[in-house]
Image: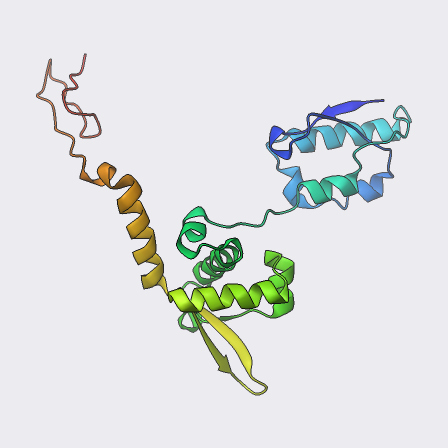
Length: 204
């Protein structure tokens, strides 16, 4: 059977591909086609092999499997996990931040998201959403309001509170980087070193 190399991030090194009709492969999501050119190159080779009948069906990774393996990951920012002590709360605030940034100040930062949408986009069940919301409200990271008739639940990220928690973690863990001051070395042979160089550095 013919094998292809899959990017190491997927945790798979070699797989066999089962023959599919060309029109089924054309439906693959565009996110897979830009995978550093690796997937796109192998997909084209695979389609050529199908047309020439040189590739026999074998058990292994199919296009549908790749749709699952290379699907968009669920994101939880590490600072949020530390700040909330909850992975589910970190997932919710991470997605809420993405949505707030996408709004670019529209609707004063408020956005609506249904229970079903949270489930599909963030992988959070109804009970996980309730627990995460309670934790984020407790920490002041997320605000809620009900508007309209029937009432619609809207959210807004408290960006000031987010900054405060991020700043506290950054200062504790990496504050020495902010305190470091780089001296500008004396000119030598008409050359002047950048402020980016550490103290004591002299150009050649």
